[in-house]
Amino acid sequence: MYRITESAVELAAGSEATTREIAQQPEVWRETALLLAERNEYLQSFLAPLLGRPDLRILLTGAGTSAFAGSIAAPALARMLHRRVDAIATTDLVSNPMEFFAEDVPTLLVSLARSGNSPESTAATGLADQVLTDVSHLVLTCSEDGRLYRDHHDRPKSCVVLMPAMANDEGFAMTSSFTTMLLSCLLILGGPNDEAVDAMATTAQRLIDSTQGAVRELVSAGHQRVVFLGSGPLAGLARESALKLLELTAGKIVAYHDSSLGFRHGPKAILNDETLVLVYVSSDPYTRSYDLDIIAELKTALPAGSVVAVSALALTEQQTPTWNLSELKDLDDAFLAPVFVLIAQLLGLAYSLHLGLTPDNPFPGGNVNRVVKGVLIHPLTRTETGNAG
Image (cartoon, rainbow, N blue to C red):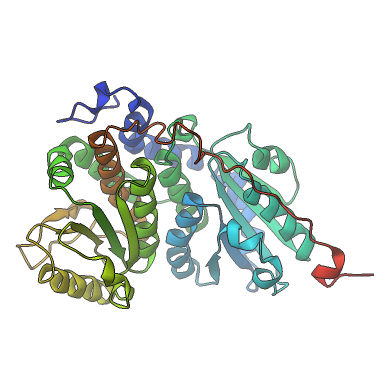
């Protein structure tokens, strides 16, 4: 059931969980869609009164990878719902609550959290309750043992959605949990989309089954720096992709991210003959033109084969190595992201094994942890909130 073909990674000690969790994603997405369909009446009874308010602010938040899921979903949901949707990391909210909660408007705080035990994730919901007059909570999490689940599962102004059990990753890097929470966020707030889920799962399975040889070739080419570029929702995906490679290689491969337009403004300094650039190409016709421009420019600056595109639409320039996922050509970029990120996940896994690391635990010394440690949450006084009295 959980296979990654054309590869011996299943046999590599210390990679079993990460391998399984990458490979299982198509199945988890299908299960997620069924789970949400079964709970649709409950979810809509919670959301409909909130979404009926024209002044509602929707705020997607999480820490690290979970925050990047929010940054991918927010632009798509703003377009679907025709309303304001913001994505702000809990790591920003907690340190600067009075800035990000400056507008005391009705707010739906959507918390995405694998474990629900990150100090910032739990603190963010408490600060929202403290600072805002009218806030409701939608919690998307993978663990019913987490504090976020325990704090909110029986509160009247909270709705908690538990991901399928398989999505609660055991490996160090978030893979299944990331894509499943992102997909859930899109389906819960944007509405069911069985056709999209089916196309995503089918394409992802094909990608997993067929792409190992190409991934191994990229890894064996000797690149020491990898850059991920994307626009709009795919800019958030580029950020998550760079983090995945950085985590799985324990920082031994330099990984960077940027938008297709932003990369020229200084970050191009990272380029050298050992740099690999992956460009996530938007399906939006206007946005896509900027992605294609940076591909053409980088091809003149780097050795042949060092610029790779991932696209749902065929590129007119046939000389660019491309993962062409044509089954997804009708989907919004946010729905492309869970499939596109498989390339980064597989690349990170292959690099990790190539470097002799253990992907399930790239930091055996514990200097980086699955759930962040050492964070001290400082209390916010009534004077600081402006509510003294």
